Amino acid sequence: MSKFYLIAGTLFVFNLVLGLLNALDLGYSGAYDPKWASTVKEQMGSINKYGQNVITDVIYAIGDYIRTLPIFIQALSYATVLLPVMLSNFYLPDFLVWTITPVVWLSYVAAGIEFISGRVIER
Image (cartoon, rainbow, N blue to C red; front, side):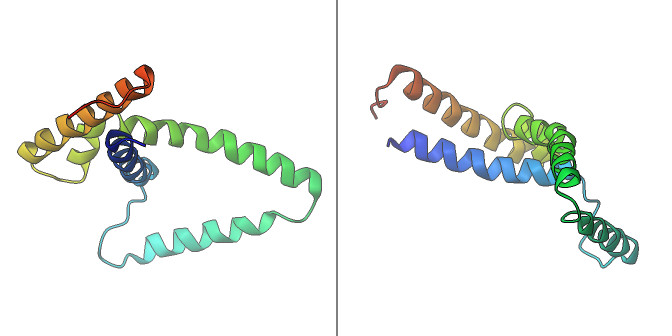
């Protein structure tokens, strides 16, 4: 495995996790918010719907995949194309956003070139 695969893969997974957190838009801040906590408790109660009937479990599972597909696509786009937007949403300064973004994109391009050509890029 080449270094570019490892670097690009690590950056991609890290950016994918950040993009998922950004796409979920939890609305959580550092301070304790009772409204947010009650919303989480209500959502946890809806989890108990599973396990009652085999047919409804399958239907719920299919619905969950369909419902979360746009969130995954949005997280994937934040990890790749919309990286500057995601970093700006985390309130990073513009000079830092535009310093990090080209480096990440360059590592993605280098890993893509290595993948397509099948050869390791020399130093």
